[in-house]
Image 1 (cartoon, rainbow, N blue to C red):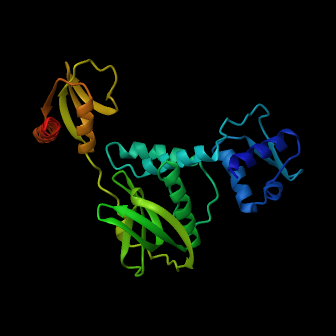
Image 2 (image 1 turned 180 degrees about the vertical axis):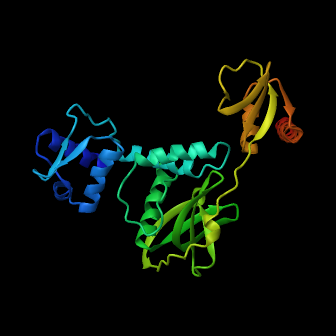
Image 3 (image 1 turned 180 degrees about the horizontal axis):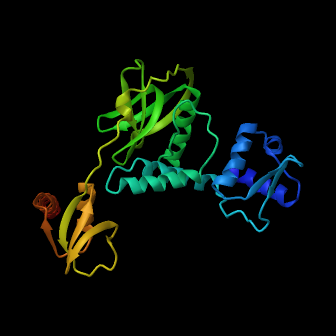
Length: 306
């Protein structure tokens, strides 16, 4: 259950003049006293509730009776999305990464929940239902120290294997689960997008604090974006060209940032623009792709005639 359910209940008790305390909260929701006290501290520090402990009544009241809880109730699905954004921003390694990671810290404050975990906190990956389900299973397996059976597909084909999952990481806009099959020293990173199916096995494995190899903890270098100079047909009113950031502009020539070359080439094929001025290597790749497409159309045309 979300801590906001408990916080709303605690707020109702205060407004009813009942002077609730952590013992009441723990008993009502069958949680630990420690978690109940965390909820109360969260109300005071993050929600700015003017809580005052009244020793006479052994409970809390509001110092300012006009205080109202902010409308922060979120469904479980909404919390998953926020956790996903926090994870993405926390692992953002491009320009202005410091500012973005501060946003990640803010998002994490809205998803505060008790987590009894052996390893560090686990991120939510994709907002797609299938990958959310994989996350649920993998995070449970990491917490419970259980092996998982994975059906995996990539450019080398399909394979199935069992894995001792240790940690979730994100590198260059892709998510991975780090673990090992037999030897703890021979750790691998399995990309979540390639997973077809995951199931938790009854077999447990032993986790040691130094089990995770140090290489997985290294901070990734900050990636600088590529910049393309493009003459556009229409004047752009915003700092984005159909999702791509505009770094600078002069008349109708725009300096546009991109990270994924293949994705940007596909964008150029379907967007309206006048001239690709630079870089030269991008012009050559675009020309090669266009010539390849024309050749395939020509071959298809000949086959249709025959």
